[in-house]
Image (cartoon, helix red, strand yellow):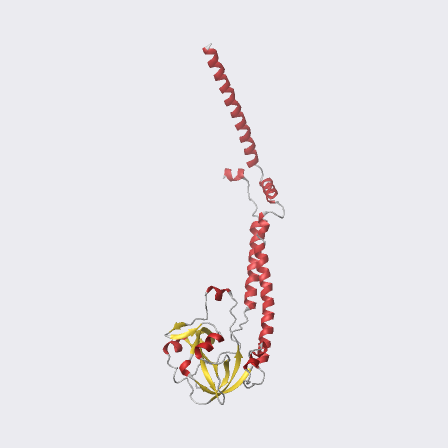
Length: 310
């Protein structure tokens, strides 16, 4: 009885092992047959595998080149808007100069910004402050024009014949002249001065950079001198004790060592075409990568059988 039971168990496991071997041989033959197909059939199977619907993941990547293309178009629109704005402000600056009216409220209209105003009086250098850092176009080396860092010099100006003091931006000092102060004294004019300046309002602060910097109206010390980051009339007039009128000099009889009169509309640089070209080329590059390597992957060359024979 014991011998018969042992024979039955051995027979069961032998048949089970044989059936597994048959199954493995069958699978191995099918896999080998698939791997040894000609390259054309492999390429066709691969193409069928990648022939997926529009909503597959690879089409989501098109959002990147399309977004870049839209940003390029948006920069072109911004360029047109900036050109119109510069032309409008240039037309205002070309108006005939006016005197400061008795009622200063007349100067608060938005249409008055960049309006030339003629004034005469004396500078009060004891309450001078600075705006910085600023950049201005100047010769850097070998006569090449470039952007140079520095500050704007803002000085109270006591009007002649009126009990009124305003703020006047005398111009730009580069960082070296500002740090050393070598032109502080010989660049000043004492006594009566007549000048023409363009009226300016608060500096816009609606960019993310200003929000990240916190309270930009507080002064900072640069080279031991009180310097403000932005043109905020409320802060500057409270610091200097003047009326809320701010002029950028555009015409004045100043010595050569005086601060350089800033370029008209220097804060409105039109670089939108460069940005538009950058985003367009970025879109073209990403679209090429998508078509070449994502939409149509490289085809398989040769056969597995041929590679195995090498």
